[in-house]
Length: 269
Ligand SMILES: [Zn+2]
Image (cartoon, rainbow, N blue to C red; front, side):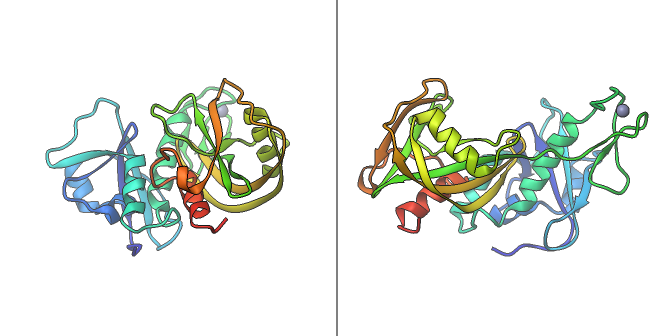
């Protein structure tokens, strides 16, 4: 899918992306036209930052939770937008405008005050940073690396049901990188802690920025090297080995989790 050039604008309200009612998948992930934005939200001052690709600027704004949506506009959950983009033929890599915009508006909201002296932060005039006008402290966007792993045993895949999942969806084992760890350390630790298995052959596959709120997901594969499944009962409620012809309900398209599972189904991992 083509990546339009120029300045791209995004307005969010909580976990929703706001767009004109007739907006298609491309404008949903690459932002909307500036004229439409300014006409619909007069007085709203977006945060400007360089686009990662395609040139121009990403402008992003976060409305108050209870703000009204203008007539003719729609509110779509950001995750549903990602899912629709992948479903319309986009990959998990072609949507970095919306991921960047959503990450930045949340970061700006969560960095209103200096963590060192408590004064109110301002936007740095040149850098992508928040600046404390009292002590000079800088705060950059926080990015929390996390790992997610396809664990295999022969021709079967390990899928787990997390206690936080609202339906019967099964997915991959995932967790945040801790201070002092390499991502490979995290893969081995999370699998040991959550399902009681040892793994070998840990191999990096792909990644995805995941701004819910500030993760960078690093996707791996690994082979089961010992142990039997024992779920921790805190994060993981159930975990099992599944073959390709008896898969459970899987997470929706758009996440690296589903992307990695689909690649395994297709025999690519
Ligand atoms: Zn300060």
